[in-house]
Image: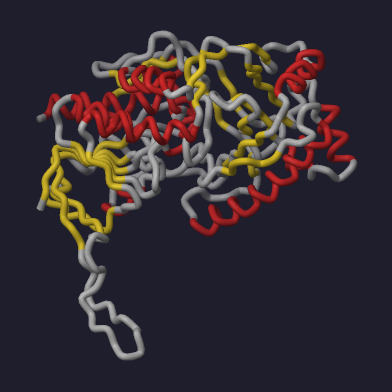
Length: 436
């Protein structure tokens, strides 16, 4: 049985940061990822750009490394003073490179099958050994193979970090979770359109919308970069509102299709925009596979309608096309672990300080609703998160990094964003180093 100091399960934002920093600190580190690439929400989910969380952030070594390496590859720009504008495809290449160079062992297309627990600690995990034949059975004359035994490999670990987002490993071993409301936050399915004449669209946007809190257009290295947004909420005056109203009136869009619309430039692609939509407002449970499947199906149908809407209504989109649809849903909240400390919205609003803070952030409380005029976007003063909120309450060597941390639902709405998740992963790695 091979042994590691740290096994990180899930190679998304928090998981990559945790694995990179653990290995850089001299810990023997294994990263297990169920898909075929690293990056999680940023690559499989097309969630770009990384939103800013303030000038006083903690545990940013990995994020700074990522920015520098992505810039070398031509997949990073700084726009509106935010360095986190990445190209999702180049990011896959970059993450492989920097984690391998740091000494991380990576296993793709791999999931944990089982785990051995002794005295509230995970002693080892088991994965299927797909390098060997998956069976010991006989091959019959009718060419049917009888599987008599599943070969597995045991891997020992002193510490486990679950950064799967949905806490798949923690659920498997019986970690205690916090209760979830049955009114789930809506999920999104992102996509990218290419073949756009961004200069034409950008000039049209600037004339249409003077609100620079919503619409921005900027020239960087001779290329047009932009962002704009619209929602069906009547609490804000949206410049794009008459256009969406007309599209619904004429049957180009369904009413629910326009509940949330947002686009961002993509670094390194002079003719593409990333869409932070559609937001799916049916009450889909992110922890239920049937609901997730139905959300993916619905999301792809809505994407087609939104693309046709853009072709018809937006200058510069006449020959644009769907070039990429996310492989995974954008999940805002799912399972959350019960940790040694349950962080609350009162902690966040009061700016409570802690002995071992994981991060310092000013990202607002951002909780989405399925109803009009019901979402929360609350600006706050700087707040911290303690390391104890990343520790399992009932397992001594299990940590969580990512959206599944130990926090109530309102506080989690501020903590879940990618920059904070980078800090969580880094903080866990540094804390584990102090324990070894």
